[in-house]
Amino acid sequence: MEEKKFYPTQSYMDYRHKALENIEEFWAKEAESIPWFKHWEKTLVWDEPFAKWFQGGMTNASYACLDAHLATDQKNKVAYYWEDEFGNTRTYSYLQLYAEVNKFASALKKIGVKKGDIVMMYLPMILELPIAMLAATRLGAAHSIVFSGFSSQALADRIIDTEAKVLITADFGLRRGKYFDLKAIADAAVKSCPTIKHVVVVKRGPAGQEVKMEHGRDIYYHDALKTADAYIPPEQVESSNPLYILYTSGTTGKPKGIVHCTGGYLVYARSTFKWVFNPSPDSIYWCTADIGWVTGHTYIVYAPLVYGVTSFMYEGSADYPAIDRWWELVEKYKISILYTSPTALRMFMKFGDEPINKHNMSSLKLLGSVGEPINPEVWEWYYRTIGKNRCPIVDTWWQTETGGILISPAPGGGLVPLKPGSATMPLPGIDAAVLDETGKEVEDGTRGFLVIRKPWPGMLMTLHKDPARYKEVYWSKFKGIYLAGDYAIRDKDGYFWLLGRADETLKVAGHRLGTAEIESAAVSMPFVAEAAVVGVPDPMKGEEIVLFAILRQGHEPSEDNRKKLSAGIRTLIGPIAVPKEIHFVAKLPKTRSGKIMRRILKALATNSGIGDVTTLEDATSVEEIKKTYEEMKAMMGKK
Ligand code: WTA
Image (cartoon, rainbow, N blue to C red; front, side):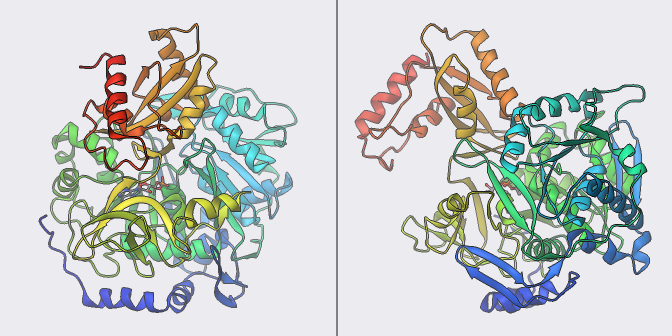
């Protein structure tokens, strides 16, 4: 692979090397960059696999992101520019954001929110979302955000798990130029959540359009602010106080509640932001993710704010109202750092270079990618057409669990030569390796399981209400070592190539979904007896969902049932989980122990043949597998 011309600094290599020699000393130094009310006593308490970073230290995320900037001119710097699909704009300086967060924290306090609570948020990409996050954290409460594209059932499941008393939502959401009644979806969820006592509603929809408000339970955000105090002292919390819980898909039907702490997370967010995005005081930074996912949590809210940069936030689709909408915004706001996903890039690539070339892209200095592997062709196109051959690309590998980026080029430290398609090397303090089934490091160039061998400050603390599952999922395959769940290769130069998930989770348009989660939604339909989901490669979305289902007796494999099944999944999870294809079959291929043979299903879905089946881990004979495959193929009418 051709190498791009950015040169390694030996000092960065030495720095990385030194960091790993003594991670506590290394992270203690990094931690001095965030404000503390009380200095920590112990950098790391490692009660394997539970980490407490900066134990004894007292801080507050709202304080670190806002109050800490008020002493200097920084207070007048823009924290967020915001724009929607219609061209409506808003701008908040750090001081204005501080004032609004204080008022909303006061409003939340008046309805009883306090330290130890979990506040649910189901909001579109409007500025009230970061405001609500910072307001909750100001009171020492944790937030749990549910992506506003998830269904009412998905929202209800998460509220039930957190037992939250307060939900913050909006009257309307916005999708491709049309408002939709978000409040009605929230209401449907709250119906089955008796713990919710208050629903705060941000009014942002078109003038004159009202949504249903329930007397005594619902209150408008702007009304709540009317009686609010102007200042609420930030609650001084322990470094390990939960900052948020974010649900993500795993290999069972039930999403995992990832718990992140305050102190370690903030330190990690800040340091990685500095290394990877190399911001300067006049940078205008745009991360195109939705705050409902971890990328938005860390790299739209906490990292940029704690660092003190100016961000741009966009509410809207990437190709609406026109396919050059993003490039118009890059030009208008003079974006210098752009952080986006391979799925978006693949879509733009399809539109060709013209929508980009007609805009002035000279403000761009650095480009980022996240969420899924970026194919080398897309990487090259990003580099050439958007970056005009002068902006390094940071391909950042990380997960909801890791809190921040772990493997990425680091222009803010020392930029190694880039190889399109590789996330390059672990960041300082990150001990990544590739292991085989037995826990031995594989030879360079060989595929294996990606692991992290030393704790890091951004790591998850546990799974909400389920420490046993936390141990089991991440720490049981290799003792004392974090299992990421991805396959990877390290090449002879020490570069990491991420090869996608090694478990039964999918990445559809960069969104993480569990096969079991979709299967359990499918079998909850009264006419479905059994279901199995596989991910198949898709040129645009990276992966797509293909579902195989056995119908209950008396139900026909009709178009109508196919539609009903899709609609059911949409209602239970959301539009992102709707399969691209549904095959009704009479049986599913299973091993003798009853495990679904996904390899066969994958081969059927892609019509690619089963290939080398001798490496299948189960005792099922090769003959049997071939026979099952042929039977299934005949059943599906494929030649
Ligand atoms: C995948 C998103 C290849 C990976 C921040 C990981 C990537 C999962 C990359 C986590 C990348 C993320 N290259 N694969 N640069 N970034 N992934 O929790 O499979 O939504 O395990 O976090 O996304 O997804 P999550």
